[in-house]
Image (tube, rainbow, N blue to C red):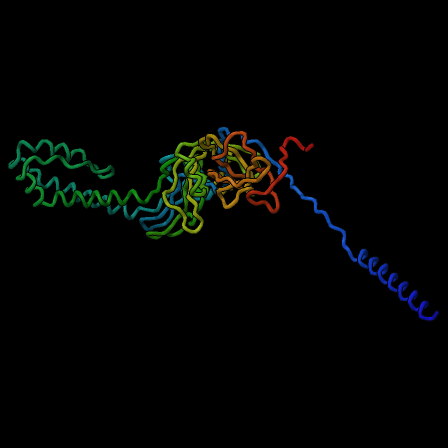
Length: 374
């Protein structure tokens, strides 16, 4: 009886063990996870190549096109004149800007001219005897000479004999010494080479002016040049004579300008070139900061894209059959935020927004920029 009970208990224990083992086995199995493939949305636009007008924007400083530094070539006291020698005073062409006291020099000049007249008068009897056919022209020349007037040019010498005669009596030497003094006398007055304004005055009337001393700055206040620095790559679109729209920093005033000249040297540090734009108009002052919008030639068969879409500076992503494809293009012109490119076919779907994790061959769901319902 005891053996029978033990046998039954053993069978029951075995059955319980098998049941428990199956439960544990079933509980230890992990459910199979199903992964759903994620396809990113790619916002695109259909390429429509067209002609694009390139505008180059730049900021520069306005300078006077005609401006000169005034220096003294003689020494003396700065004389008082009708107009004060002050900054902002305007002068007409050929009007005296300043004059230096020259009484002593004028006295010496007159003495030299009197000596020249006397030396010429002294040879007249010999001229009449030795060169009777030339006497009349020298007599007429002598009659023209006046102490208070500029010395006229010497009569033309027709023979070597006459030339040697005059040279031996120092007529020509005295004449050129006199002309040198007359030329130097002109330097005691500085006249305006054109209508303009005195922008800097470094001396006061009544003070001593020394030879070589800088006296001030005189400029034409009607014609200016706007100097801008442009990238070397932008010069392809520019030429002399190109029209330029000019405005002040606050965009409250506008002027019309024209590219006058382009420097031939590229700045090695900034890779820019100076471009000079002629500007004429009211309200312009030297030293103003102005904006320039240069209208250049059109770029044919091109589109504009955000610069952030460029890959390696010469590639962009397009979508073909719902897959990204890296396409090589030709960037033609860069602005701060955009780039003008060539090389894409019409109706091609070009990526319009940056796509994180994008690479060549990834599957995407294209969404046209004008269709946000997809």
